[in-house]
Image (cartoon, rainbow, N blue to C red; front, side, top):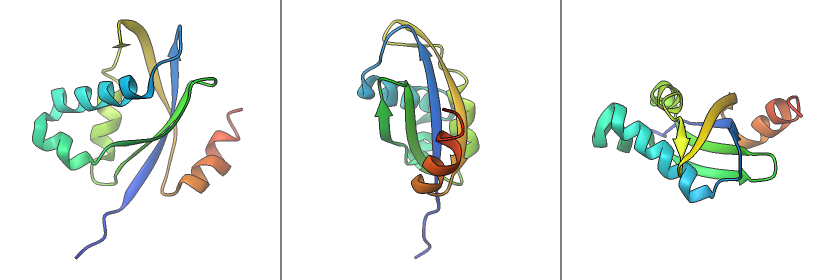
Length: 108
């Protein structure tokens, strides 16, 4: 059986107040399913790895094959829980360690 390659996205969330982690991942799932349907959303294997409400940063895991679909879906999110938000991809990596070391520390 072939191993599934994963990618981790570091996200910066711009909003007026902190979001609940469940609201964030639900909004991302909804955006992916609106653009690509239930079947396309199931192929992404999306999961929220980390969310820091103080810095409004999150780490999301997806498969390498669906990386472009997830990035496209993130651009369609304009509000979460009736709050205006904007999601920015800070970086992408194959491991969480590299994401923390190379991307997140540079943007502090």
